[in-house]
Image (cartoon, rainbow, N blue to C red; front, side, top):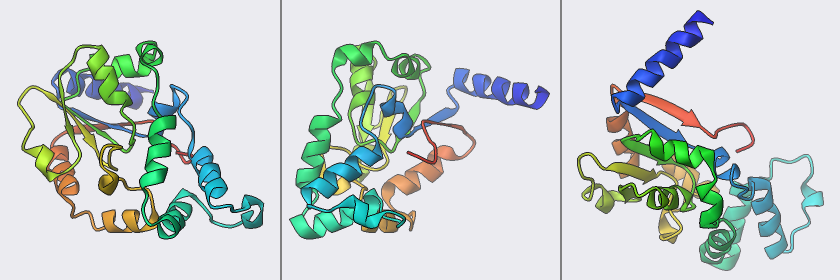
Length: 202
């Protein structure tokens, strides 16, 4: 208990000094009832007329299905459009989200997120807080001192090419040599990193 208390005290101190980076996963978006990965898998299977019962007991997941989807459809565009429509949360819902309010209130200098949706950006808008959205190398030039950064680590609905959703996307990211990977390594030096919304089911 003493050790846990010290860890929490250290985290609080780092947040107050703006020396903490937030890394937000799918669980943050699921607090406002966004569909889970299993819903995405079901949608892709339906679109491709695949019977998921044929794959019980296998390692079939959204990465494999999204890869097959891209090959069959020629691009991830239609799937991205479906996600964009279905993963957009009404502003009234976001206004009531304690998690999103706290994220804005705690004033993290940098927030990394693996979520494609715009819920963090919308929450900042609703709270009247300024931010810079970073999706690619060009956006890094727009960073301004004292303004929070929302780094879309796995891409953004506004740019199909940025979205990391299929197997080849993840394999490319495993090199950890993209501009955002290099930025993250630089940002993390000497900082406390708080991960929220991550679990084995994200």
